[in-house]
Image (cartoon, rainbow, N blue to C red; front, side, top):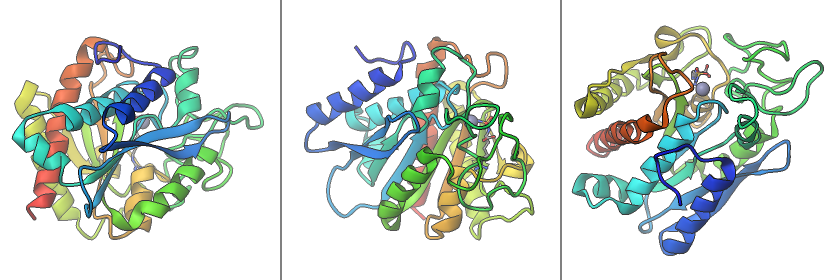
Length: 300
Ligand code: 0X9
Ligand code: ZN
């Protein structure tokens, strides 16, 4: 049975998504957002409590080894469906939601054999895979990305060279006009990252708003267990990194004003190998942050 006391493999996550569509047929439908080099589907769910809502898009697992990301995304999805907390309910029902817990499925499957795998699994000359968070077509290869295929930050042979990012971006383009919030979940470092990541220090037109809401989210997150997050634009808070998914969403679809990339627990003690005992507390505090972001957006 699906729970948040251990990490689940891709089949387990996909079976759980199917079970949600069965259990909540009026609210949840499964969606295919794209496909992978090895022929898998990038699967997700659409959650809709009624017509006429803006869409919030949530992605996890773009980096295969960051297991807390799919676990947290599924945790939040489950709470939106089951919580009877009035604040959570109001936020859940304020949007349609697209949840994609694991958008690099080939990589995630491969981490069952090679736990520290990060990239996709398409073969290149001397090595496998591109960094799918360097492969999106917005300022592609404009800093913090490598053209060497064996690098962990290999940007791919061109923008959208990876079928995962290309197909998911095409899916996204079909819903983009209704999207107003984009959230990407990674680990680790406890950061709330604001676009943009490419060299040159471009900031969004609503940079101040993104800082204000990001800080409010970090405060709500901290209120649960004292976990401290740093909020900032990508180059200052972490490093220059171009071709990221949230940058593409915010940069290409300029009406999507709210875009963040979370780096979840921890700050390095366990790193990518975050113990499963921390899934639920991470899920709870991250839900607090997401609820705060939506509450801020909905009231401004
Ligand atoms: O390097 C990355 O892709 C992210 N850090 S991680 O340790 N999870 O690999 C940071 C992403 C920065 N975000 C964007 N450029 N959008
Ligand atoms: Zn990552």
